[in-house]
Length: 240
Ligand code: URA
Image (cartoon, rainbow, N blue to C red; front, side, top):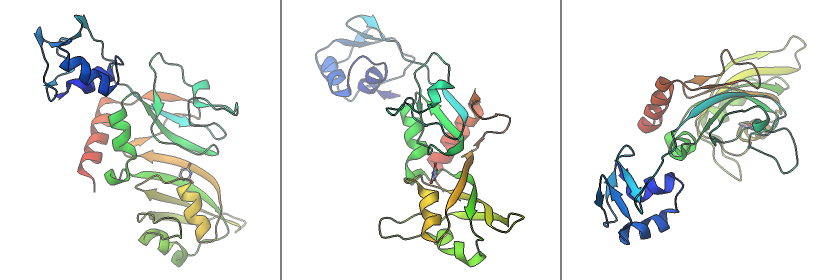
């Protein structure tokens, strides 16, 4: 059950405020009965009409894309750089769930479900995002401890992250590692490592909650499976 004004807003008929006016003015009916009370709830499957016209609710859709490097994760770019819309060809209007930097590749979720996007991105739901990182220099074990305990910088505090699979390249100039974070602050991974003296030279998101890009090459996308959507909701609702 959902508030009537929210359902009307979601159907793109009016803003929440205008939808409330429509209800109090007696213009809205649910299953043949005029509803004027503001707290009223309905199911999106009910016969909801405004001025006698049935409203159409957009089906919710969920996609995962393997975002290529050097593509903006927004739908278009004022600077004219390649954008994910150049790769994405579907009828529904969708928007990205959070952002990835221009030079970051990997898992990008897209949906038309604002509530889902909120639960996936708000730090209080602690959704895990796992990245594969290449850093300048050789990272010693003790160096990453501040990141693992929860790094404090003059600008912000980061929630504790999990660092694993630390290894060096053959020429011993760079470090590879995996890191799991549970929030998505601006340039978070680049800033955290920069704070401890290492620059990120390559960044790929391998996993968002239970969703991976396994089987998708760069630029490809697929519908998320219903069980994946359900699992994501459960993870976000339970927190950790
Ligand atoms: N952290 C970053 O620094 N960049 C991203 O794109 C994602 C996480």
